[in-house]
Each structure stands twice: as structure tokens, then as C-alpha cells.
Image (cartoon, rainbow, N blue to C red; front, side):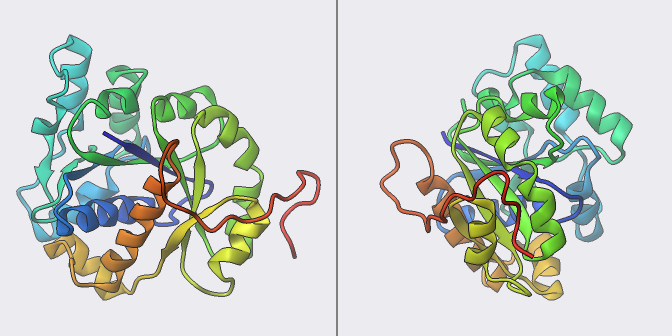
Length: 256
């Protein structure tokens, strides 16, 4: 099934929340969907989930061990935990040392393994800097969603990585914009020369509802449903259409 790898060019643009919201949107629509926390900086999703569900435990290590032992096959979904309620996820342990070690030792083709299951999988791969370890986390993805805030600073960070990201991903790359101010999503997409999968707009209470109940009726999850459709439409052979932004010459840089 399709694997969507979500990356950011700058810290804390909302990758984990977007991954969880995409899964919540899929579940709300009756589509088998899961999300996997593959961010080497540690389990922010686990921290968010534990606030409303204290018994939640990370399961990424167990999945990595099963992959390493060759016993997981297409049955990796048994390592998901139901957080938010009804949204299956594989959570990473908190802290960079533990998470990065598990991710590095688990497999060199995470997305290929995750693609063997029956669910559409949204993978939070964290910040992308362009080194070989980052590329490994993208190997086997069907589409990459670049998460970028609608600010000049975030757009500048993303602009420098678009070319290397396209080369490393070896699959379509589409833009997911977080927020609507100060720039419109299509303006950001035009600056980066990427197709726009959609715009994520949320309020603090929507994020709280996502981690507590799945937030199926929030603006956040409704937006995520459109973004999910947009990312799936970007896959090779898909029939959907994306809002295409004109390519920007590499030497031009983002508008100021």
C-alpha cells in the first residue's frame, strides 16, 4: 500500500501532527491508515499521546527488532498502538540517542517494509538535511510530502533542499504548507517550484483534540483529508490532479 514520507527542512513545522492528522483523516473516512514515527530526534508523538493516554508506550523498538530478525513480513501493523483513539501508530521513544539508534539499526529500507502492509502509511521522518542517513529513511516511499510553514524563513530553508530532496527521494515530491499567513500556499509552492498537495491550518484546541480523541470533526482533520488525497494524487499512475506551481530556476532563490 502507499507510503507517504513526510519531511521538513526546519525544526518544528508540524510534521508529527500532520502525520497523525493524515492517519486520523484516513480512519475517519474508513480507509485503512496508520502513521509511523521515524524521527531520529525522538518521540514527540509519544509525548503528545501520553498526556491524554498515560499507558501509551513506544513500539518502534519492537518493530525494529522484528525487522532485524526477519520475522515481521507484512505483519508490521501488529506493532501499532491506538493513539489517538482509533488511529493506529508506531511511536518512537523520546530522546535523540534512543530513537536514532533504533532507526539506524532497524533497517535500511523502512518505507519498503511499511509498504508491505494493507494500510496507507504516513511516515514522520523528521527534519531532512540531505545526508545519507536521511536518504535511507525515504527509501521505498511512494511520495514525499515536504512540510513547510507559510513564512519566508521556512520557505528559504526548504528552497535549499528541494533539489537534493528530489534526487534522494526517487519518487514525486509535493508540498504541504502549514498555516495561511503571511503567504498563501500557492505562493509558497510557486517559490519552491513544487506541486501543492494542500494546506494544513489548525488551532491549538484542534491539535489537543487530535491527540485526545482523534479530532475527526476538527478543521485540522478535515484539512488533512484533502492533503492526504493530494499526496496520493501525486503518486505515479494516480488519476488525481495537483495544483502545479511553475518551476523556479535554481539560481533565482525564494522571493523576498
